[in-house]
Image (cartoon, rainbow, N blue to C red; front, side, top):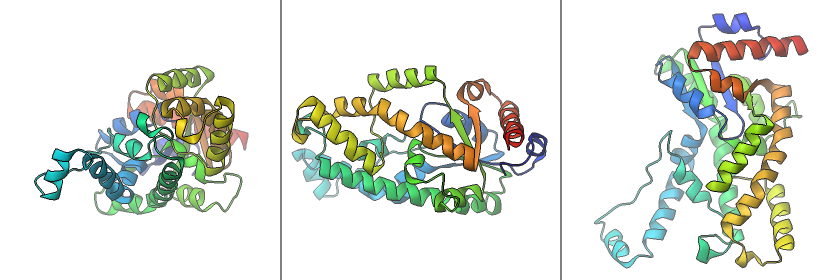
Length: 290
């Protein structure tokens, strides 16, 4: 699909898009806008993770926290109350809360062993949710009769694929179904993402090798033990490095499997027609380059 012309894209009656890139660059904006037209089926990978694959683990974690409070424990054990996450397309916080942050438990951190277990669980869940995309493409058309399909992926998709492998199972499955589109930010976007993250640090998923390296580096540089790590300080320390780690991986995905659009152009696309024009222009550029 990445080799079709812009005119062919504009004339298509069955457009299928998979957006990828760092959180905060417009994936949710575009997905919500297209979904509201009633012409596009929206498949959120993070929502699928939080409901289908990690839903029980997320709820059990919340119950475990509630069980620490005597009055809540008593009511839970007597089935007087129930606790369940209120996850939605626009509220994926329960997934982040489950991932957590490593470090001092008195500061809300998790032991590094528990943290890695949750990272592994998230990785498996995200891979499964990504591979479910084809099922939802079929479901959108056959069950709901939606002509168009938009998939909103999480920022960590690049951690689980090898974009240089022409047989990568995840990218092969996705590219067989839809057009992969990287929303690429500028240096200004990166600086703003870092500032935003510093104000409100949120859990992230990391490639295991990257996490091992950055954890060892942090302990060595700060001169602290695992149990002494300030959880928020660690993920702030890691964020800019994670952006730099992911950038070439996103680039390779776009170069070998999809197309690139600029975040500033996505921000200006306030209508489906404007978004289509951005995609058409990127397709024509990709055809010219190849």
